[in-house]
Image (cartoon, rainbow, N blue to C red):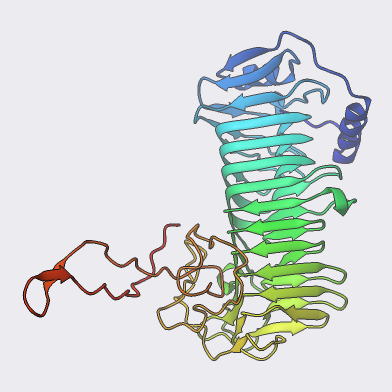
Length: 433
């Protein structure tokens, strides 16, 4: 933990310089079991301690915040399902601050600090099985490289995850981020080094759910935003994911923007995904997709539409949008090729804010229209194709498997023989997400 006495920029520069020098921590690392704020602080700064286990829920104060030497070995903080509540409200209040830090099975209620605070600042960070509540700080997590897995982050302002400097990538796997603020801002000075991977995750924020400056890989994930957009500035490959622009997340007085925004110079591939604008105010009619001048977006097997009563348009194309076929769009604002369709209605179930999907109905025009499947799973982890070809969009409608039981029937001339094969039936969609 850290009680800041210097500006954030100075401290981060100190960490970077120390890591550049290199060196190993002392031998003989130990596990510390703690039950109070002072015990937690003492264990955190001790370079001999490589594992901290909580014996009780702990409240920490500003006096308990301290800085761990970035040259010290990785420290793992195992909450055992317990909670740390940071009561500090001072500028730059940060619950944990150091170099290599792992969080496991823990709940942390961050400092109710001004916009410069955080729950954790580090260099190499790994978070597993955590619940983090960020109460208006700059971000819940601020680091250079690492991963966040099986974790829930609740926002009351600021970012959920923010990068600090170039040199590392970010993995989000089975992560849920919700609340007021922005989701992930991975916008480094050297985008070529800073890959962002998002898998099986849900981000629903009032601002931008994801801003990726460098290479991005997105699979089977859901993004929902109000006045912000999912912004991909580097090369990006997005598969089996749903993006929704939702007025329910908008802030009063701020205009809605696109669900996905491709800035100038970006090159994004969007395949077998769903993009929706749910805007319903005639005075506020944003697009589902926006491509700026010199931006490039390639579409394949994607469903692009608007919600019931929406007055939005599918695409604002000021750059280059290329279709590779199998797309289904509600208007003619996106370029088409022969295997694309322009329809009045995508034929989807109402967008479900809880699951982040809008599955196709039985008679939807998105069914079995993709010439070549781009993935073998949909957003919910179901197999595709299920019918004669892949469905456009993020969710594959599942075709019921015909019964395989053996029966007999009377045949002409007496006796019995095998019954005629059962006729396959299309049943209601079965979703397991």
